[in-house]
Structures are given as C-alpha cells and as structure tokens.
Length: 316
Image (cartoon, rainbow, N blue to C red; front, side, top):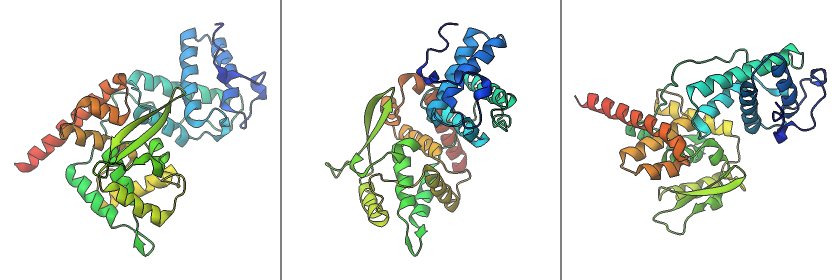
C-alpha cells in the first residue's frame, strides 16, 4: 500500500478525521479517506479506483472546493459530465463504480460529522445501458432557428439565441468550449469559408482544432457584439444562462425535449453523418480520441437509423 499517497493532490492534509469540517477542502480529505477504506479491509485495487474517481471530481469542481459545498445537484452534474461531456468513454461498470465512490465517500464524511448532510444519498445508482440521446430532425432545426430569430430582448430582437443555437448545431462544440470563445477565435481571412478555432487544454498541453462555420454566422456575430458588447469573451454570461437560452428556444420551437448543449452536439454529429462527411472528420470536429470515438460512432449510427426510420414512416 506504499503508493496510495503518491498523488500530488494529497499534500498538507489534516492529521485525523476529527480535524475535518464542512469548510475542509476536498484535497485535504483524500488520505484520511484512504486510511478509512484500508481499515475496512478494502483491497488496494478498490482504494486506487476510489481515489481516481475522487480525483476526477476534484478536477471537475476544483480540488479546493469545500466538502460542505457539494450538493446532490453538483454530484449529478458531475456524473452527467463523466457520461456525456468529458469526451472519454464511460462504461456502465465505470459509471456504477463512480456512483458507489461518491456514496461511500460522502457517507463517510457525514458519519464522522464533517458535513451535516449526505449529498450523495439521493443520487440514483442506474443499471442497464445509458439511454440514447436525442438529435433534432432537419425540420426541428429549421423551426428552432426561426424561433430563435424571433426572440426579443426588451423592445428589440435578441441576437444571442440564434447566434448560440446556430453555433452549436453547426460546430458541435462543448459547453466549456463555447464559454471560452473569444471574437478573435473566428478566422475571417476567407469570407466564403470562415473558421472557428477551438482551443482547449488536455493533460497540461494546449491544443486547437479548426471547424468550418456557416458563412452567414460571422455577420450574426457582429450584430450580437454590437448589441451585447461582451468584452473579451463572446459569451460574458454564465453557462447556466446559456442553458436557459437553449431551453427557451426549444420551448418556442415546440421541441419535445429540453434543448441542451449535449443534444445539439449529437445533432451536429448526426447532420454531418447524414450529409456524408467522413468519420475521421466528424471525430476531429468533435475533438474526440480514436478510443472514445468507437462508442460515440455507434450511438450516432443508431440516431441516424432512428431518424431515417421515422422519416420513412412519415412518407407512407
């Protein structure tokens, strides 16, 4: 067990569980949690797996997050990110174990009196395969654009809903990537084929990928910038506010599901697949590794087949 504490996350730790309280940072609890698991007779493999799962939580929410700040909603958002937004396959087995990790960890914190409530207790342990996501049909995309185009901001038309919807449905970028976009990330050197430069950090290495934009979108961006004056970032609001915008667009267009970043990412992939774009180009556009693409490709294929079957039934 000599290598359990090797992660740099576990420095400057309290000496015992009695030193922990709701203000303690996540990173300062891990070694004590490992010791508790060891006393319970957990195997080295289990302890390493639970530690890795908590490292993912720390990476997602911030290792300095106070343990008392975690809520059920925070944990459910983390699990959603693991399954749909991280860009790495999350098998049913891995998902189930990560839910177990959260339940064991927060139950331990609650039992020793470090936190007043257990936020992981209401989190459901799901069995079976993950449900297939939803991808908008061509008609729904058209209706959503029309709905977004007609939305107002006070007494004037609001440019943000259409800008956001068309950006996501055309590029398939993630929520975090949209939030990091700057006006300078739009390459207009070729007016007939503008390009979006998406920059992201992976394992402490900065990478970028280029995605073709609809030639009309930069003009829409200019109108948006003139209306909102956002400053350095294109979207100067919170990610939650953008989620509300998408929800409003979906409701106005009569979309039968709650519109989200995830749904528009799948929609982009399905549209590109149906348009005949090569698989490798779609994978690169979405920023996925070859390993994660295997599972994603299978889901895209099922969504395409689903749409084509529904269209065939409608023609009968």
